[in-house]
Image 1: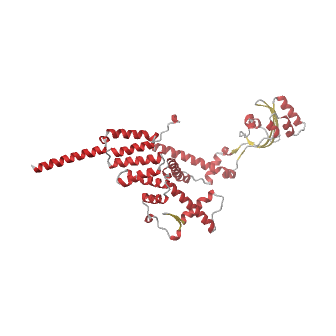
Image 2: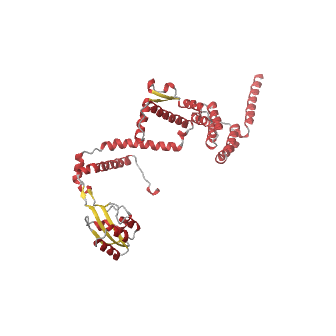
Amino acid sequence: MKALQVVIAVLLAAVLGVQVYQMSRGPAAGGEDAEKIRKLAIALEETSPRQALAEYERLGRVAALSDEEAANLYYRMGNLAMERLKDYETALTYYRRVEALYPKSSAAQKVGGKIVVCLENTGQSGEAQRALARTTGLSESDRPAEKGSDVLAEVGDARITRRAFELAMEQMAPHSSSPAPRTKEEKLNFLQGLIAKELFYRMAVRKGYDKDEKFLEYMDNVRKTYLGNRIWEEEVTSKVQVTDDEFHSFYMQNREKFRIPAHYARVGLIVCDDEAGARKARERIEAGEDFMVVASEANREAALREAKGILAPFYENQESSTFERNLRLSPLLRETKSGDLVGPVAVRDGSAVIKVFEKEESRIMPFDEARKTRADDYRNALEFDRKQRLMEHLMKTDRVKVYEERL
C-alpha cells in the first residue's frame, strides 16, 4: 500500500511539473496565440522589419518549437536583419545562435556564408577570411603542390603562380596598347595589379557579392556564351573548310554574284525649280561656262551651291547622300558614260541637269580579286547554312517552343 502511494505521488508530481512548464511558456504554447504572433511578424516584415524582429523574438519565447523550427526562425530573423535592415551585427547574432545551438539543423548548413558577409560588413575582415576558409573547407593541404620558385605571391591561402602571371600577360596583350612587361620593375608592377585584383575579389566574396542575383545572371550568360562558342567552333567553324579549288568552282558557276555595279566616281548636279531654269543652266554650260560656277549660282539647294554641285562618289543603286536617294539618280544615269551631260530631267519637285565627269562601268570581279575580298563571305555563308541545319536538328531534339504572340 505504501508503495502504491509513492507511485501515485510521483505521477502527480510529474503532471504538476508539466503544467508548471506550460504556464512558464505562456498562453501561446497552446498554438493559437503563437500562430497569431507568427502571422503578425510576417505581415510586418515589409513595412516594419524591426518590429517584425521583436514579434519573432516573442514567438521564440512563448512557442513550443522543435530544434529545427527554432533554427529556421532565427535564420529567418538573421536574413531579415541583414537584407532588410542592413543591420549586420544583429544578423550576426542570430546566425551565430543557429550555428551554436542548432548545429545539426538544415539552417546551420546555410549560415556559413551569411556569417562571412556579416563579419566583413562589420569591419572584421580577418575573422571573415577565417570563417570563409572554414565554410569552404579549404586548408593548406587542399592547395595544389607547386614548386617554390613557381609561386610569385601568396594572398592568404591563395597563390599567384608563374603560370597565372604569364596567362594574365597573354590575355592582356590583345586588349592593350602598352607593351608586355619586360623589366623586373615592370613585372613587379604587373604582379602588384594581380595582387590587388585578388584582394578586391576576396573582399567581394566576403561581402557576399558572388551571391548577388544580377552577378549570378551575368555569369550564367557568360557561361552560356563561352560554352556556346565552343560548340560553334567544334560543330560549325572547324567543319567548314574552303579550298581555292572549291571557291573557284563556286566563282565560275556564280559569276554574276561577283558583278561590281557601275561606280560614279565624280558626278555634278544642278537642281532647279522648273524645267526652264534647268534648261538655262544647261545652255550656260554648253556655251562654255564652268559647270561648278554654274552649279554654285543656279542650284536651289544651299548645300549643292556650297559644294559647287559635286556629289560624293556612289555605286549604281547604292546612293549614299540625301540628294541621290531622294532624286533616284541611278536610273537617270544608267545609259551614260564619262563626259555626258544629262537634262533637263524631271526630279522630285523640280528639274535637274547632271554632269557625269567620271564613271566606271559595271564589271565582273576577276577571280584573284574575288578570292581576296569575297572568300570570307563565301565561308561565312557556308557556316551560316551549317548553323541553320544544326539549329533545326537541335530544335527538334530539344523540343523548342516559341510563343511569338507574347512578344
